[in-house]
Image (cartoon, rainbow, N blue to C red; front, side):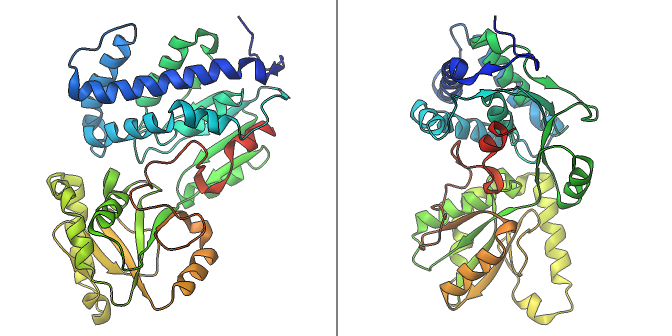
Length: 371
């Protein structure tokens, strides 16, 4: 068995094929699980223990984290099944020069826990780049990733033991990728200032509507806003609309998520912010406040809105919006629009990123290959 210890150099191109095969098997596993939930109550074959473990885990996650509903967890798994399709893995791998020798490093991964498997991409890229992931998971999401790592180790035993999960401080690492709030980012930047690092802060999705969107496109936008209860960094929390846009079209598009009001934490957020905003002493602000019993639309120049709230701004000229987005690019994770805006994605695509859609626009693979 190849020794992956720090004192050994690893020829990347000799093991890339093994990793590609392992990733494709993981994609197949997740795709088969998704289909089996609907069509097949019994999981056959050598992967059966993993199917069964995942099935049990999904049903129990909400006991610990009320935001991790079975539907949201399954959507995350479906999204990864799509990202790990064989052709997409091949396309991603071709983007990099993987033939050079690297010296494996211990890379600390400090993960958020806002949505299911939010830190999986960092683990995947670190492992694929030939380094040792040293993972500190959020207590809100600390059960799914270890299961997927065990699956990788099962289908390709050569990679067993490369990942270390820990609860304590990150003191013996060579580099770090840390995700958190703006406040925690300041701590991370100070604490890890002497080693190579990627520090991520708060970012959110933004939508720019033209007024020509169809009902189906607005329903897709509603998914961009409300999947995972709006907690993801790729969720749309701010929309720019033409001055004559009818916001009732947004409300109609959200009706597929009416069941959210049955979740206590979401309902409490909605009722709390509706009360707070309604008590505003600013009459203009009160008049701009709209709600439909499910979401609140509030006129606001900020980007980060609370759960159950989406901010909006009106515009006259699309060029003004593009200028604003360029100025505020460090606050924005993804832009949704039918308009010709650089890098914009279509409605309904924010929670389906590909392997090369790196958080904050920072190519994590390049960072890791250059260590």
